[in-house]
Amino acid sequence: MKKITFAFIIALWAAYIFCAERDSLSDTSIVYFTSDISSEGLMKVFEMLGVSDTSGVALKVHFGEDGNQNYIKPVIYEGIVKKTKGTFVETNVLYVSRRKFTKTHIALAKEHGFGYAPIDILDSEGEMEVENDNPKYFKSVKIGKGMDKYKKFVILSHFKGHGLAGFGGAIKNVSMGFASPNGKKEMHQSFFPEYDPALCKDCGACVKNCPGKAITTDDELYIDYSKCMGCGECISDCPAGAIKKPTKSESQQMFLEKLVEYADAIEKKYDMVYVNILANISKGCDCSPFAGKPFMNDIGILASTDIVAIEKASHDLVDKEHMCEDAFLKENSVSGKKQIEFALDRKMGNVNYKIINIDSIE
Ligand code: SF4
Ligand code: SF4
Image 1 (cartoon, rainbow, N blue to C red):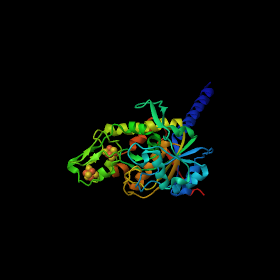
Image 2 (cartoon, rainbow, N blue to C red):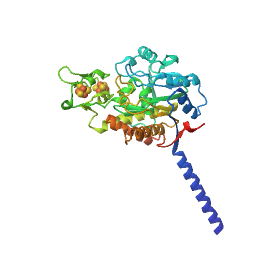
Image 3 (cartoon, rainbow, N blue to C red):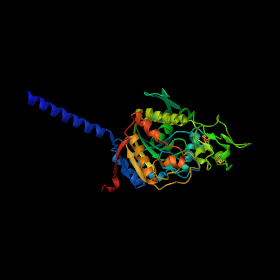
Image 4 (cartoon, rainbow, N blue to C red):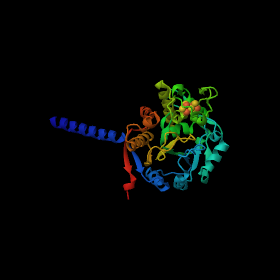
């Protein structure tokens, strides 16, 4: 009897160790890294993901706003386009720009060098609603109707700053990037910048760059909130700190939660893998004609099947290179780290990751 009890305890202990090891492994996601920021480098990290069926692949990119200097130039996608015979996909934007309408959006994409592969603006034939099984703000999310044409999505994201979200990476590329203009609007609603006339230097940058034409200076500077889309560009652009994010921190928190909620619903429905390109890291995003010069060195390219792990690893590498705890909070006065926390809360992936540097693999 004593022997049986002892054996039973050993068996239980072994089972416990086995389960604990399994848990610790399943809590860690792999993120592949290369410092080779080129088409070849991108192909090497992408191939590590083991995507076998590459037919009918949609390559989610950002074509860059008219005048933006920092968007990722399409030469880097040549290898993946060749391998997957993929289609560049995007959605139209909410604000007044050439990217608001399909025809001018495609013309701009071609001017920016993306014309060597098919281009599909996913909401060109309207929007569709996708059910959200974990709603806080939205029972369904509104996305481009064309998404159902594709079996697999490679989310190719430029990891950089964003005036409102702190940073823009894979989460934002999925949520804003696939949302129809109506979807974009419902995520942005509730985030209106605040203006402090005492700090204003009258430089006019915010008026010139506002994509909604919401800022005027007829008499004194005025933000028309009925035209404002809450994009946050004026916050990034103001050199005097006269335009700030809303003092109510709930507004930004709500925006980031909405962003993550959209990404969650979309990535649950579609098969996606993620590639983040850490180059041309500026304060403003690729939607801005004046995103500012990159404020730090280029780092490399990351790839993962886990959207949370790749965002966390990307942010950590940027912070390390910038030698601070939150590079985007420092440069932009806006932290985007809550994106990662909210995504973790929604169980979209792991914050624990292991980086495999493929540069050292022969
Ligand atoms: S957030 Fe600023 S830049 Fe964006 S639309 Fe509103 S006023 Fe214009
Ligand atoms: S960018 Fe700032 S300093 Fe320049 S006009 Fe606008 S609020 Fe004033």
